[in-house]
Length: 196
Image (cartoon, rainbow, N blue to C red):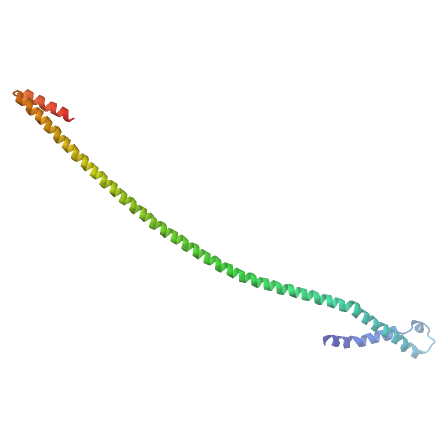
């Protein structure tokens, strides 16, 4: 519609230009001829030039304007397709980004739960090991206490036996002879030396 309006504005201008250009220049140079034929153009010249102009416009339209318009339309369609494809890819990328972010969040949550569980299990295992080590230590301490008590009991028994042997030895020596103060001192020293 806009093209038709433009053409209706330009068409009278073209008619005036063609009418002026269809005049024969030789007529203007010859002043003596008829003035009316000089002012008004030759109709046959005008029709030939106008027909040539119409043919030229048709040829330009067919061979230049329409192919260029087709090329521009194809190029526009291609650009529109690329824009649409780009928009589609951007939307897919955004969707993939959201999915990736959700997966990352899920993975982080899962990893933190795994770490938390591993820490909890490690602490429980640590407590078990500590309890087991404490029990083993208590058992070893009890065994050592029992061994010490047993060794003490054996040592006491040995001391008692040694004392009784010494007492028997002393009493047999005392009975063999009469003991004076010097002998008594000597027996005590011998007893102490045997104890060392």
